[in-house]
Amino acid sequence: MIIIGCDYHPGFQQIAFVDTETGDCGEQRLEHCQGAEKFYRDLAAQGKKVRVGMEASGHARWFERLLGELNVDLWVGDAAVIRAKRGRKAKTDRQDALHILNLLVKDDFPKIWVPSWENRDMRQLLWHRHRMVQARTRIMNQLQAVALNEGLRCKKKLWREHGREQLENVRLAPWTSRRREDLLQLLDGLNPTIAELTQAIEREAEKSPQARLLMTHPGVGPLTALAFVLIIGKAERFQCGKQISAYLGLVPLEDSSGERRRLGHITKQGNSLLRFLLVEAAQATTRTIPEWRSKCIHLTMRRGRKIAKVAMARKLAICLFWMMRQGWNYQQVMKFGSHVGQPGNRHGVQ
Image (cartoon, rainbow, N blue to C red):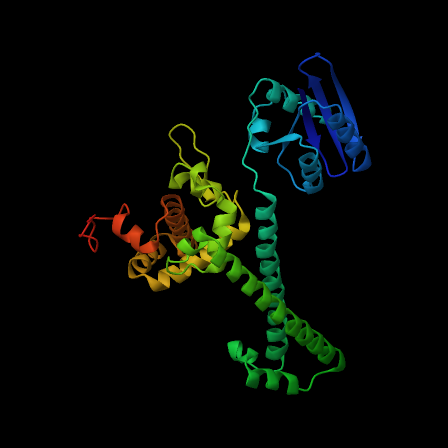
C-alpha cells in the first residue's frame, strides 16, 4: 500500500509518500489542478491500494471528488490535533507533509467524520437561503433609513401595501429616488427566491424522518430541524450532551491554571449557521413553554440577556440531540426524559 501525507493549499500541495511493500519513499510538490490530477491518475493505474491523509481545510471539493473517482482512500484529520502532535516549532510545507505521513504510518492519525456528497449539497440549500435572507435584511434596512430621513416612521408597517405605497410616493432627490427604485427592485426579486428556497427546505424536511421527529419540539421548524440533522449527521458519534455543546461551540472558552479558573466567551468552534438557528429557535421555544420562559428570565436577571440566549440554545441543542439519538418525539421526551419525577412530571414512567 502507498501512504501519502498531503499538505494541501488552494494552489498546490506538498506530499510525502512511502510504499509499505517496497520501502520506496519520496517528496513532491504538485500544482493544481493538472499536475495533481495526472499524478493520482497514474498512481491509481498501477493497481495498488493508496491512502491519502490531509488536514481538514476548505477549497478541496474537487480534490476529494477526484480521489473518490479513483477509489483512493482519503482520510481527513482534525487540524488542531495534528498541530498539537507536532513536536518541533519549525513549520514548513515539507515538514507538514512528513508529519502527516508519520502519523499515518504510526496509525496515530486523528481521522474525523466527513459528510456525504448529498449531505453537503443539501447544506448548500440552507446556506443559500440564509445568505438571501441576510441580503434582504440589508436591503430592508437601507429602505428604512431612506424612509426615516424623509420623516416616514412606519417600522414593520412599511412592508405592507399601504406602507409600500407611502414609500413610493415620497418625493426624493434624483439620486435618492434612483436608490429607492433599485432597492425596491432588488427586494421584489429576492422575496420569490426566498419563498422558493423555503418551500424546498420544507419538502426536504418532510422527507427526513429525523427532521420530522425534531419538528415536534416547540419552536423548532423545518429549517432548524433539517440543519440539525445534516450537521450532526450520526448522533452515535457523540456520547453526551456536553460533547454536542462543545461540537457546536456553545461552551465557554476556559483558560484555567492552578487555583485560578477563568471562563471566557463561547468558543464558536462549530457550524455558525446551526448555532444561529439554535439561538433563534430557543427564543421561540422560550415564548412557548412556561418552564423555559421562567428559566430564561432567571438567567437574564443573573447573567444578562446575551448569556441567557446562548444558555437556552445550548439546552435546546442537548434536547434535540437526545431526541435524535433515542428516536423520541417531544411527548416521549417529556414522559421519559431526565426531568421525570420533578414538579410537573410526577407521573414518571408508566
